[in-house]
Image 1 (tube, rainbow, N blue to C red):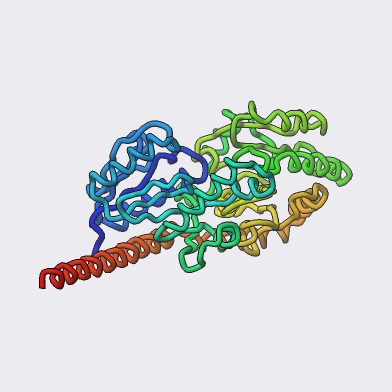
Image 2 (image 1 turned 45 degrees about the vertical axis):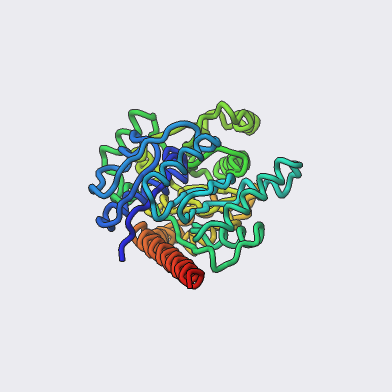
Length: 401
């Protein structure tokens, strides 16, 4: 029996990670489900980024700060007015919404609470933790994007294993369109002046991404390559956020003497990022913590060798297709880069394994499982409601008698 109405909160669709998740889940639902009525609650302008959707998808405008109390009330009022059977909240939140229908939620990582566990934050930190715990415990189903994230939830919040289901992320279909053409390569040569071999990092720039140690490892690598008389013009390209809030990175580059060899490009469009992934000698991703970690998988879809961390979810995501390193050991990172750069048989083996590993993750497979979970939750809710109504009717009849 198909569901009647499902609300999906799309307000964080322009963010890294969560936004990729929302766009691809909604886009795939649009291909697979033409019966259920879906209400996409958020900015109509953001919905346009998803592309064409069938007529059973409707946008319900809701602007303003996603985390404000006023916004929570407005979301709840919309769900109630539309008489939704189920709501899908695609990210972790910490203020109970008292929704008029069951909700499922997607949890991408526990980073916020892991840092709070290390740093005592007093009353407000404790309240934030307890409210998040309440939100998780009241969810009808929790989708964890990796086994690592599932285990973290169980350990930190004591959430029962049966309540959490691992449903993996996958890469955006735009990264599956083959290798860069001559025109693509010419574009990055002309627009970005990239005409040399390079290592690549793409992702957010924040302390847990470990970009400072990556720059230090690259500096050490350049010294080793001088001894080998190899890759004298090798550069490190960093694609991600604006650097204005990360002065440590500039200082690290200057301290390492890498001003001419490390380039920060900021944000680039997906179509351009595809070319950078494809042309990179190595994709390097030494993050200290990831709930899933999409960028290594995006690079693997292009057959690019990956060097990444041996912690958190990353070994689970990259399998045997990447070289794993301890992310806090600069020289271990450097040695891995040196080996992958110069060992051609290893590069060929990593290329073949990368294609196979990236192919294991599919939005269609993941969204089909999400659809099954929607139906299971709705079915349980209907059974519970029906039983409650029968008991109420029986008690009323016995009272009359």
